[in-house]
Image 1 (cartoon, rainbow, N blue to C red):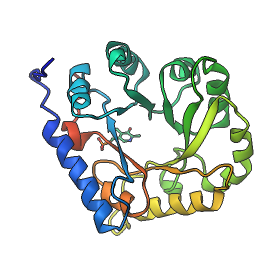
Image 2 (image 1 turned 30 degrees about the horizontal axis):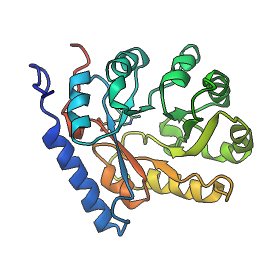
Image 3 (image 1 turned 180 degrees about the vertical axis):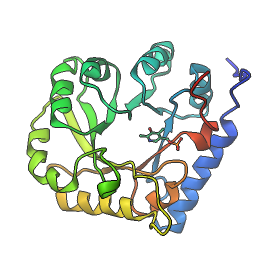
Length: 238
Ligand SMILES: *Cc1c(COP(=O)(O)O)cnc(C)c1O
C-alpha cells in the first residue's frame, strides 16, 4: 500500500530521515557507539496512515500519550507488529487498557499506578517494560518522582513481577535564559548510575525530544522520544 498524505498531513519520510541523521551525528560528536541510541517515534495526534508510512521505512517503536486515540491506532495497525510505548500522564482508571495494549510505559510516576499495571497485565503477555519518570527540574516541575525518593522505592517496584523495570525517563521543564540544556539529562544519568545494581541494570535512559535530542544523546540517552521533528507541528483541534 502506498501512502498519500491527506490535506493536514505531510509525508513524514523526510523528517524521519533527518532525525535519524541528527541521532547519528550526535552519537559521533559525543563518542557514543553508533546505533546505541534508539528512536521512539512519538505519534500522538498522527493518523494510522502516517504511522504506516514510517513503518514502511522500518520504524517499529511508536509513542502515544492519549489512551483513547492510541487504542484505535493500535487496533488498526495490529498486523504490522509494532511496539507501542505509553508516554502520557497515567490516570488510575485507565491503567487496565495500558497494561493490556502496550509493550512499554515510560511515565510511571507512582507505585500505586505500577501496582495496578502489575495486577492488570494479562498473564499470556511478557512483562510490561517500565521506565520510572523522574523530576530532574526541581521546583520548576511536579512531574515524576523526586530523585531522592527512588532509593527507598526501588525494591517495591522490583517486586512487581509482571513489570520489568528497564530504566528512567525525564521530561525537563522549559529552559529559562542561562540554563544549561544538558543539566537535567546529566542528573538523570547520575541518578541511574547511583541506583543501578547487577540485578537491576536500569539500562534505558529515555530522554531527549525534538529540540534537545543532541544534549540528551551526549549525556547518555539510549532512547529519544521525537514527534515534531519527524511529523511537523501538531494540530490539536482538527
Ligand atoms: C509529545 C512528547 C514528546 C515529543 O515531543 P516533540 O517535541 O514533538 O518531539 C516526547 N515525550 C513526551 C513525554 C511527549 O509527551
